[in-house]
Image (cartoon, rainbow, N blue to C red; front, top):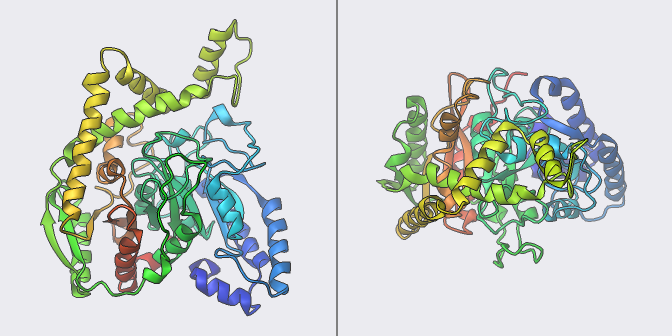
Length: 484
């Protein structure tokens, strides 16, 4: 067992008993990065000097016997679309390759208050657009379980870093499945909170009505602690929800007797047979622990992918209009005038996937097509949310696979964006409905991890954490590590 196999509570106990120091933890993280990063490619920027200085400061505090923060001393990696003061934030785009922010986003401030140690910024699909992490304009990330396969996207760097033992935990962002899909592919735990639970202030926007920041961890308990640290109302974010924040760790009782689980039949159609078999085995385990489950229908699931790509691309086309070569990032040289400056800066700064989505979104919002595409997609979103609302009138949690397949080969879908988009078919409906969902490892197919998705009512993260924790405590899929 290594330090990376310990639970957060175990690490804190060892810190208090002086068996460990924060410097030991940080040294271990950078040792693993030095050993494995060249093969994985999870990081874009390392914060080694800053992390070591912060570790020394926290060790002094530990020696004085002061109270420890919730995430005291734990090294964390952060997806590179979250703004970090003085630490480069690129969104994996050439457009922001020189951008050093002058402030911290709210989640970064909260991590610092909880006394976590930032060790670096993690690779991603450019501006969070992609399902494979092959759209980073710097280099792709490789799946630690098979270096010839993708880690998933767009938080592929975050999931791969945790799976490879290069970070104790990480933050990702989820727009249509960008936390849960890579968590499934890499065999770790990924949580997309309810929309509005975690502040988006300081998160570079892709699709503002869908983006959410969430934890990627080795186990459910650590996800509960990390969520506790970052959740809560933020007046700087107009979409932040004013709700009471429960103690998520205290919900992990192991008692799931009587919980009512819905299993959508649409989520089991067309998935890999080995994935379906693992999900059914997981349901039998939950049933043996006292939960009850029934098959249900979410009839508008088949329209979710089309609606999502119209809505997300429309919002992206608006959000990315700020990148014009004047206000942010890299400016094109030798432009002939203002319009030429805009054109050349955007042509040179954005990669092909970002350009594809800007064009799709601009078309959907254009005069004459708005009602036919954007407005119709919004109506479909309402119907999908209604499916979830009606299901939650009778059931506590919805359970199904996180992805229809395991991780695919690098390069195998690069020239087929529609097939790439369908990898998120089981995560996108949740994002459109704005409810929370959690992916945990539930098995393996040909040596590759399989994810089980727990979907909850809005702001009821406690119940999906409780159910997932009970499943995890009675299985050992999350304990397996890739051979690196």
